[in-house]
Image 1 (cartoon, rainbow, N blue to C red):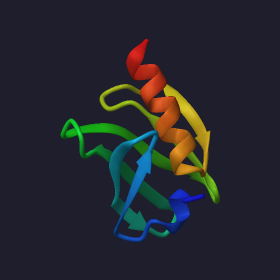
Image 2 (image 1 turned 135 degrees about the horizontal axis):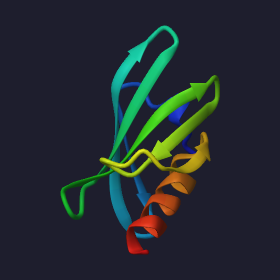
Image 3 (image 1 turned 90 degrees about the vertical axis):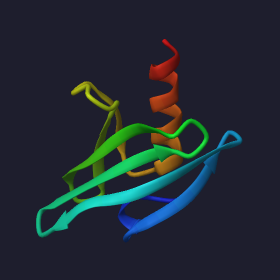
Image 4 (image 1 turned 120 degrees about the horizontal axis):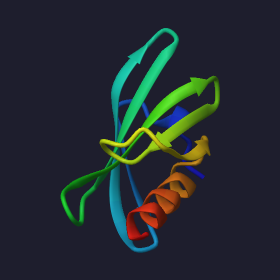
Length: 86
């Protein structure tokens, strides 16, 4: 299991046969933001914000609705793609 905490600069992950790259956008004391980028379609799939240590809120791009709360990157991507299909 890859967690958002483990991503330092960037990490690649394949979820359900689709390739993603997770990039650290902001990393400073008390704040950590990450971008989930879909390699297959060239789009930002979501944004993860550290809500508290070990807990991230994940949203769709340009949308403030939280679709996943936790620290598991693969599970967050599954929730992002589920929301995207609805």
